[in-house]
Amino acid sequence: MRVTMIGTGYVGLVSGACFADFGHVVTCVDKDPSKIERLERGEIPIFEPGLDDLVAKNVKAGRLSFTLDGAEAIRDAEVVFIAVGTPTRRGDGHADLSYVYAAAEEIASLIDGFTVVVTKSTVPVGTGDEVEAIMRRVRPDGEFAVVSNPEFLREGAAIEDFKRPDRVVIGTEDPRARAVMGELYRPLSLSDFPVVYTARRTSELIKYAGNAFLAMKITFINEMADLCEKVGADVQQVAKGIGLDGRIGSKFLHAGPGYGGSCFPKDTIALVRTAQQYGAPVRLIETTVEVNDARKKVMAKRVEAVIGDLAGKTIGILGLTFKPNTDDMRDSPSLDIIPALQAMGAKVKAFDPEGMREAAHLFTDLELVDGPYEVAQGADALVLLTEWDQFRALDLAQIKNRMNQPVLIDLRNIYKPAEARAAGFLYSSIGRA
Ligand code: NAD
Image (cartoon, rainbow, N blue to C red):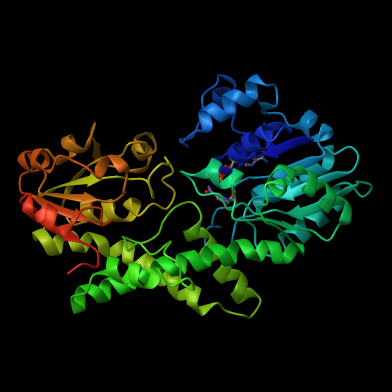
């Protein structure tokens, strides 16, 4: 099938490359010239494990191409995906749908023959109706169907998630569109991955309900961690103890500095706003948003609680991205914690395996150094913010020797307290007495 992807970011590029790998002929369109130039040169503009090989293989096979001008690709396509950003709208917390609507107008003006237009971007309930109305206005004669097909991939494991998904959700009431989508995802249904067909509005809500539930689960264990610290319990054992219950499940029960990233923060607040707008407030999610925002802000105070006044102290940060195996810095907890440390008078230096380029644009007065041992050099405390594998087995003796004082504040609980203390560290972690 001929597929066109509008938006070649984390979702558009991974989905486009995976559809090409299924055997479809895919054109990825983006309006960012630097992104398209890099892709045409064979460079991958984001860090996502395995994506470089997948893209190279499918470009070579002639199934995957990139362009700034999507006109021809949209005209030829049987399926056009909208995979543009839906960030938080300034001022009110709703999802900013301007990129989605602009893409819909452009697609409508170009389609030729029956075309399935699929919203892969995360969009509030009713967006599909509005996309359809926009397209109908632009092309009263156009033959098209608008489908919702939310994406559930996780950055860092995106290819695996796309090719071996827990489920694919397809929201449409149009039988022709359903048949086209069935054909598109046939390689997955043949391998028995569940494909859930629903009405379009239901599909749109499934995405938000999923992300809100996971954000709530993380926030739950974070609050349990705070309680563990007060009562002398261990949050990791609590998580294990409850996670083995099949009704609860062990995933997303890792206590930490608060969730961040390109999806949970914006999707939870957008769901809250949608629910308020329809008069059915989701109070659990309102509280989740509030508790998580507050948590990220108080993390810097933990450092002060361990080493005292931060004025003139040097704090080393290990990890800047919101999770490992991505270069994505959107809404990363580091964006709250580092400025808070600086506001308390600390000098901050940091290292991240993939986030340095983005961090250089986002932070002021942050010294970026070449590796974890350079971060430790002369530091009064080391704060572990992102659980990259390369931070899991640091030479603690070498770290200690380089530090001004041996303090390790492990906000991801990747070290064992006894081990860190045996290495001579004053060690503080989350939810462990
Ligand atoms: P992104 O910012 O990485 O990519 C969006 C791309 O769209 C950008 O490159 C931008 O230049 C391009 N674009 C915008 N308008 C365009 C237009 N009219 N024509 C061509 N290109 C255009 O965003 P992302 O992280 O890929 O997210 C895209 C959507 O997918 C969002 O709604 C997001 O919530 C959702 N989503 C993201 C993830 C994730 O892990 N990143 C996972 C699931 C769902």
